[in-house]
Image 1 (cartoon, rainbow, N blue to C red):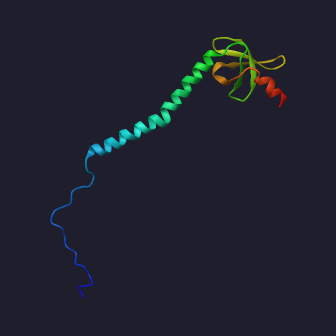
Image 2: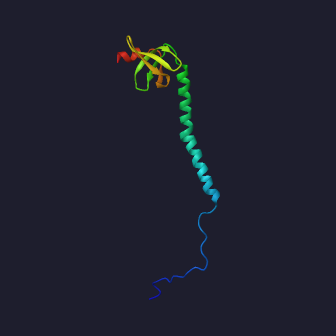
Image 3: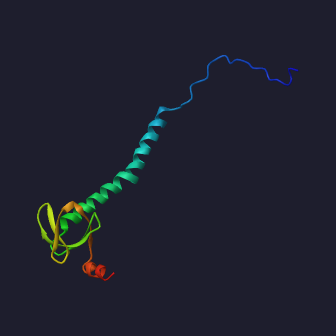
Length: 114
């Protein structure tokens, strides 16, 4: 009956530990960092830079959208704050960083018609 069962034989020398070259692991780690940089970090820094430029460029008369979704027209500008008219004789003060977008001229009138 021994022809149905394979006999087990012990090996003489221990097998080499798998793992190969340690540079392969380091190369994989560096590759992951590069991928994260180009897919996550760099685009976020680019958006932040564009937002900073937009906030610095706003001035009196610009039509904006705040982070809360409020539409308004800038009536006064200081270093850190803006006065925004959101309706006739209704003004609010906002921090500059609370601006989400600068709208093209005439967007408020178009939004009133809707």
